[in-house]
Length: 366
Image (tube, rainbow, N blue to C red; front, side):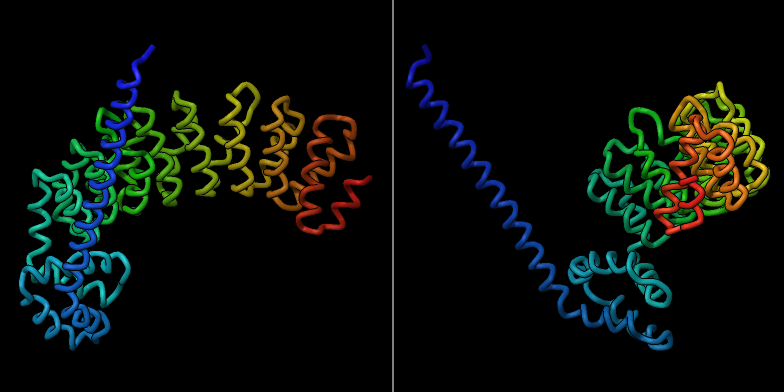
């Protein structure tokens, strides 16, 4: 039996620890509040000047910039978080003025220097500022931070590289997808998508990478960014890549691009014997493609043993317009007791209810 004194002592110890932690949290919150209020008090006299700069016509910005460039370091330190936040919210003349202000104060150069700081907070903050400034000269330094020991710094560097718009960052971003210090695929995909058409060539090169995740992200971004010129590379990925996930994303990309070159490989991908997941995505992509030539091959799969494949095929036919609808109606009329007819009837009924199509309702009821 545990002695009562021992239990009492343990409870008192836990109570003491809990009170100490509560006090520590209160002190930290109080210190943060005091720092915030101090910054607000120091920055208050020049906030009006900042708003005046953002609203001023171009010919009046020069004098206002000079005045803001001369404010003391303590005031700028208090005001700079507000300026950085505004960089991500304004555009046009106002954004140009803020970028010039950073340059005049030497803050961009300081941010580049801070990328090498021992402090993870300073490195991450510097990456964020350089991304908001779209400071391309910082690209090599930001690429090095993709392997930073701090996860938050790596994420900040990836986001910043997407904002700089420099296509030279593509191979570095793709490489950051794997390894002990990998960056989230979601973050890398968003960054690559932001780089636009200038990145397509380097993204296509990523389709040859030995890492499946790199190939999957590369083909996904090519589809999302409308890389029509890289359709042959995406077709090759759909036909030849050994990884199912890469083929799935390649099929989806071809549907998004909507190019005729995607028709034949997508038709090949829906044939029986292929893995179910690529077949489902390829069928949906054929619906997005809108090619009437896909009607026959899709209609032949209405009775597919896999209900997910059959359902996607039926919805794809509906998206093909009158020709696809006619194929669905034909299945209901000519093969009324088959799995294909049941699938077609269900999709036609959904379309009729959703779109108040009385002609479809009459056809389904026959």
